[in-house]
Length: 153
Image 1 (cartoon, rainbow, N blue to C red):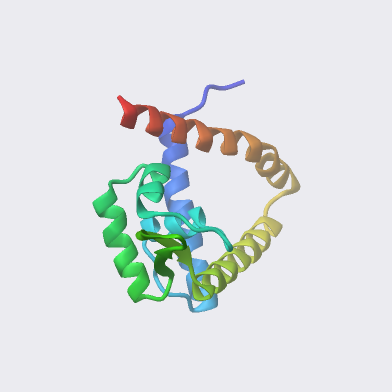
Image 2 (image 1 turned 45 degrees about the horizontal axis):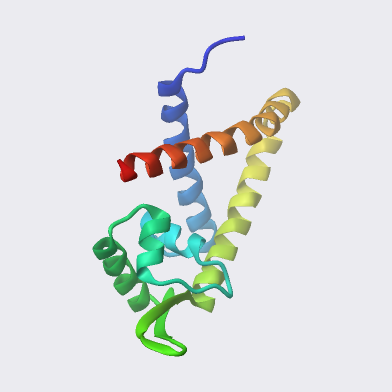
């Protein structure tokens, strides 16, 4: 067994992600939505609401950054801000149907593109990718934990 080459893994992940984003956007004629806005939409699945402070804490971003992102997202029709029922001093944020439609289309296009690209690979490569998925998910979670622990120090 060989050791993990972190620089090589990082050098593959970023371009892979950019290629997938670009191809999915082109396939579905989707707008270019900044990564930070994508994180906010992913953090607010349909039927959920949050405050900007809660989002900032969950995403490890500053409250002013989240506020600026929400302002831009509201102007683009991706989120709605509304007074919290029973406490009009607080504002809740929810994603819009437009945001969910865009992200559903993006996810479907991404899945189709990955499926088409994977179909061109050797069966051994497809098996290796399937086998690596749980480890990649755990790596993502470990990176999130590291980020959270560094922010609390």
